[in-house]
Image 1 (cartoon, rainbow, N blue to C red):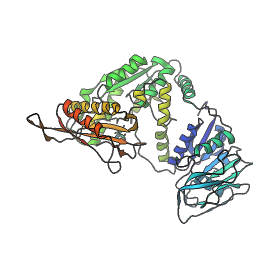
Image 2: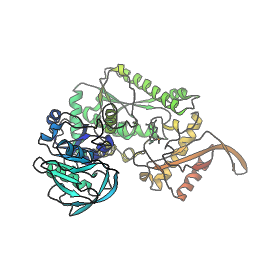
Image 3: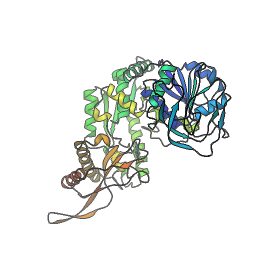
Image 4: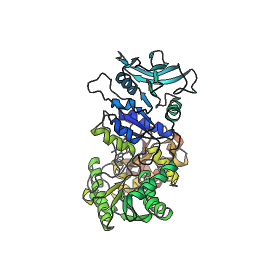
Length: 516
Ligand code: XMP
């Protein structure tokens, strides 16, 4: 939080909600952070936030052990906005009343605005809002007035003008509340007095300065570069701060896509002038994967091998004190939520899990407060090529989890060629940016075909293309037939060892995006 002079805190009563709110606040160019719901008022006072937002959450204020905030926060003189559960909690803690609902109100509602002087300024008499709640406020606390209502919810928004405390029952952070951003902007700019100064350029400047301070004049750092947007952005940012005292280690694990090692090296060595140690460890990884068919075992072996190689290379460098990691904010929140908050633990992917503890490296995590879309904005600000910034996600275990069954050099080569054709044709059709991922999979079967006069017995290639917001759920992409046809023709004609192409038309759930 250091140096971010205008900060808004989101108190976390259910991290999915908090995260969405935090993203929306940052979209208003105001820096914000998510903190525990029970953070002491004294700690908040020390952080001097411009405003506080109490998030929604899955609890009812009547539940045993329902999460509460420190009552002291209401008398700090800092503006507070309670959203959904946050509003109900505020009402209950300040002497109002909350009614238990027989049934949930869920969906769009027309919000009639009774007072448009501050929170709802500029919205006119009514606006659409998204409701998702069981309980609701039935009596406002002393000092509060009702400032909006809906058909089902007589107290849909409330305010204590003197103490600058606000509560809204609906969710301004979701797209179904079309003017939710204006409501948040009113809170941030009008009520809290924030200005929209949190930008990528400001982030880059400030991070550079902080990394420099942290590492000092002599310190050296090492990072694992994968060519993905997170590790690339982290590396370029740290390089901006400490130059060639950063060494990047780029391990070719033999399961990368076609042309990837060359592309990563030319971008970072030639263009950005980073000090990159390139390790072609293809043989070691293939040896570690020999005979392995189980997907989780493949992941485990690739992970172990990677750590071993990284460790060997890092030790060769000598006195390195710092390790750069591209950890993102959702990972931080989710791992924090798992041991504290009311939110359920959600699966999280870590870039480089389980790095050697005995190396005693201090961490530099320059992206630890950023969301993925913010990383992309920062990456562009740093001049990273669009090819890296907009690149589809690629799993750490790479093509090894797309060669079904045993991973051999021959089968990897087949898949690599087929995959390159898929990407080329998807880009040529202008569809790349619309898709979450599009790639080829090599099943462990063969089928009969006929080429010329000859019978063939060769592999099929499965084409997988999905749309998704976050990879948690996904829909198979309705690719145009002519694109499917071009991909199929090219793969069968150009990739030796393939005589058939099939299209995967399953969504997630119940399928997953990757086949393994
Ligand atoms: P699934 O297959 O679980 O994938 O629907 C969801 C997203 O996660 C990626 N994925 C991985 N990423 N290591 C990673 O770094 C992995 O082991 C891994 N497995 C899946 C997948 O590509 C998709 O974007």
